[in-house]
Length: 114
Image (tube, rainbow, N blue to C red; front, side, top):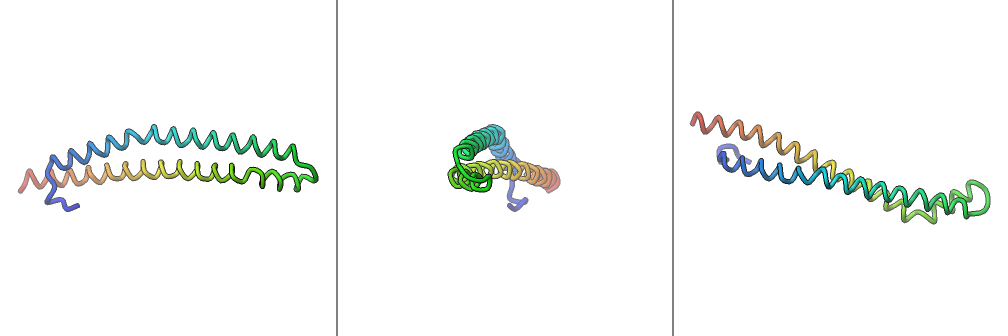
């Protein structure tokens, strides 16, 4: 992004885009965290049931429970990745807002003092 080619209207439009996109972040984070909580609950419940239903030593029961719930454990890992992705996107939007504000200040100076 070259500052000398930016107009105040360009900067305002970019800031509005960032604000609109950022507003979606809190909702997206809530949805991702809710999904993670649901996945963790499903995994924990299934693991405990599988552990209780399995026979043998504690180590045997743990191994059986892990094998029977591996797909749910994978879903938990994916849900954690989704939460991380939403947080990263929110951070990137915050950084973009900061950078755009700096550019806005530079454009303001250029327009005031050509």
